[in-house]
Length: 387
Ligand code: COA
Image (tube, rainbow, N blue to C red; front, top):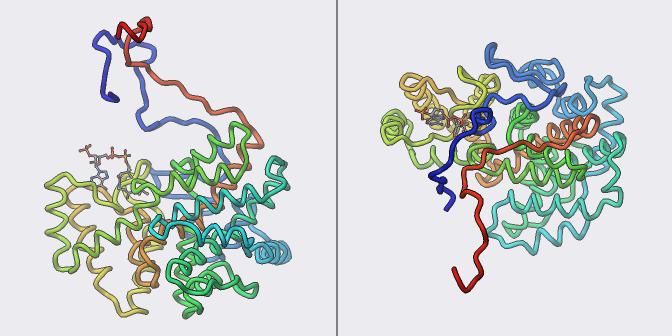
């Protein structure tokens, strides 16, 4: 029925300009980040993302996104102390994780527990800047704990309490695997978190802003963000990239696999972008760290496959990899289960969502676009006996 178009439908000239997928629509201003497809750049609060990734910790980037400026030493120490103090989950949250069906996707568990965090917060309706910042830091602190606990429960392993002597990245490895790996691996992971942290009005951020615009709360906005990010056209692509690489199996088959995929008009995950048309500014940095992971682990085949797939796609279609293309194999080489790649993305993007929620609250107007009606012409309801 959704394909039904009223045969008598006459487009109204003034409404003909439907922006399918909101392509090209500028729907608000933001000071959080800027994507510039002409220069292939992404800046968070004015700083190029690749500079932040190479020179800052993820905690500094989170602070920047929330507050607009990079922290000095004492500001960072206070922020870090607060974040570390908020990492633990309530017994109720752990109990909910344990009762969820093991087959549900970890994004669904994460979405459910974030919803519970909203139920647990007595200040849920307080959206003053200071309270929303507290909630943003709490979400930042708890996301990795939820993801790692979910993993260990699924594996029948003991859930590990968060440590307060480790960075967000190192503590996540500890809670997930039970140990912190060598520094290069933690650093590569941390870089990925910075690269994933924010990306202007992408689908999940927009979803969070729409929810916020109704004067709903930050947890509901985050749940909406998680729901949107889960889809394979958005965050779920990093998982699909790895499934695809495993299906291809052998780097020598990459080029022919891609030729077949293009011939059959397949959407290849990890390629393309609504805004970037000549390459994703985050890719070179992530690719470099994925290559380091290949060296550290000795698993060279994924990055060889990467090059083969990219070569054909760029040559034949001029479509470039997006961040999910290098992050998929990087996370795989770090040892994470594929289903946890998108929840890891959430651990990073919660910072961007929260920054946008706070910005929306500060200058709000309900988001309510229009649609062009193409359905049945107006008609009268016939009594049931006459239908
Ligand atoms: N594989 C093959 N072809 C692709 C492609 C891909 N990954 N991405 C775009 N294209 C092609 C489309 O088929 C279309 O070709 P056509 O004009 O001949 O029909 C053209 O490029 C435009 O693509 P479209 O889907 O309209 O772009 P969009 O802006 O609506 O969608 C994405 C953007 C990101 C959703 C899309 O590129 C995609 O689905 N990519 C794969 C999923 C992914 O990696 N998502 C993560 C994004 S960060």
